Amino acid sequence: MPHPATIRTQAWACERNFAFVTHRTGKGFWIFLPGRAVQLPEQHEGETKIYRAGDIELRVRGDRARLRFEAGDYHHCRNDPARAFREQARLEGYDFLARGGAPRWRLLLGEAIRLEILEGEATGIYHFTTPEAEIQPAARHTRYNTQNRHHQLRLTLSGKTCFDRVTGRLFDVTVLVELDDRVLHGCGEALL
Image (cartoon, rainbow, N blue to C red; front, side):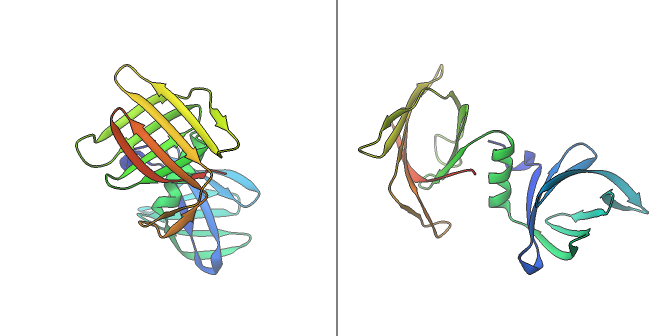
């Protein structure tokens, strides 16, 4: 899971309910529009950086963007950091994202497991290999037990709804993370 300073993916929400995703690559962007992905190299007009390919033109300044292409002009696009994080995780091959509080934490599950504890005495990033899942259909639980050289991780995904007070959203999966002797509770979602 990337550190906020290394997040190269942005998820833009524009007027008229239009949304798109960009991913920075060196001196340009990949832009993911409905039905296609296009590489936009960096160009300059005076001191302004513009990213352009064919009929697509993108201008980015901080957390705001302007997009022009055949479907229309979108002048008021803003980055949604939470959605951008999910989109970058998807691009990195993760399938599932969980989060919780007290202390704040995030977990990504895919071919590897990455747990990030964001506050408290256990603050840090923990990497694990993903073991084969222990699936208990009757209980609607999926469990993962793994360890690295320093830590033991037990992860339980339960098919019970979970309300996240921080985001105000209802999720389909309740998550229990046990890192050594620490127990973390949270909610999760598939990254489709």
